[in-house]
Amino acid sequence: MSTLTAQNSEITDDVLVARFQDQKDRGAFDELVKRHRNRIYSLALRMLKSEEEALDIVQETFLAAFRKLPEFRRDAQFGSWIHRIAANFALMHIRRRKVADRFEEPMDETGESFNANGHWEIFPTGMWGRRADDLALDGELREKLIAAVENLPEVHRAVFMLRDFDGLSYDEMASALETTVPAIKSRLHRARLALRQDLAQYFEGREA
Amino acid sequence: MKSMESTNCKECVDLLVDYLEGALPDSREKALDEHFMACPPCLDFLDQYRASSELCRKALQTEMPDALATKLGEFLNKSCK
Image (cartoon, rainbow over all chains, first blue to last red; front, side):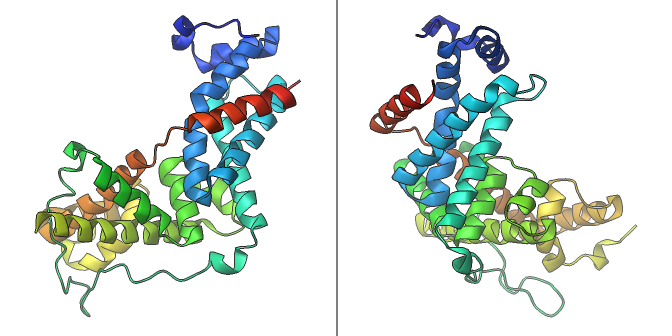
């Protein structure tokens, strides 16, 4: 039974972890679930493109956290820890779907074109990059952004989500994906280039 | 120190991941800084590259639907003893 109330929302994760470890306070654990479930769900949903599998990831993540939390070192960040658990479960799901052969699926060209001297053949245009902070994420733009990410090949999407959405380190990603840091950086770069190209086309159409 | 002439537009684009994270050697970073200051197309590209990532990150924040949150709660109540 929860011993927490809505007024306790300003209590830090560290305090909730301590309550769970010291007093077996189940309400503290439930509050940690409430705080972190949306972010974990978002990561899993975009990596796996399936609500059902995303729910599996969230369930597995919090069950693992419940079991391991008694030994959790309090000098670590609960948020980073649980998101690493979630990222690993998501990667395991991807491997289980036997998509390894699709993992290396090549990406379409990402639009930049240079001459033999390494200078632009066609200049990138548009001021939208400079006013991104002021852009309202209306329904249409939000849908476009989600579609752009979902259109990335699976491994590029996974790397983009783990790095740019979840902040995993390159070493952690390289280890989980059984590859090298330069290979991870290369995929991240290709993913970002593809997203930029998609958005450039979208904004050009909107400004036309 | 590398001069601007030694860093062309393609090299700037190829090095964006490390440039944005401050992971390039000082001389290389300075050469890219100089190139971006002198090359408006590359500066536009840099802004767009950075903005794409930030916009996607914002758009991807999704709230778990109520029905799934309920299922999660039921699962944890049953499994976490």
